[in-house]
Image 1 (cartoon, rainbow, N blue to C red):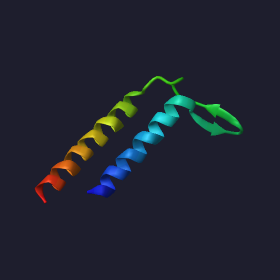
Image 2: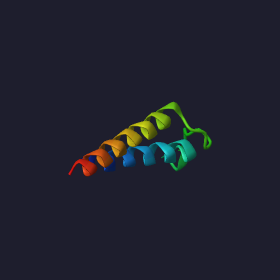
Image 3: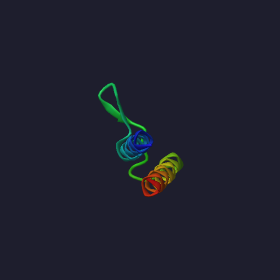
Image 4: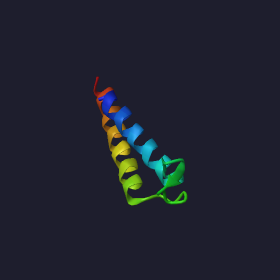
Length: 62
């Protein structure tokens, strides 16, 4: 359960960083959204939110 939360957090982090600065190709930043959130980033945030909710519910059930 904790592994899923960590995986989702990493995915969200990568999406946010890509939206901000793109990716480095041949010494230049390419892509990105100038800091605007993409639909993919919003989806990653929603997935992390659901994973955290499931993690919290599992801990309360223990």
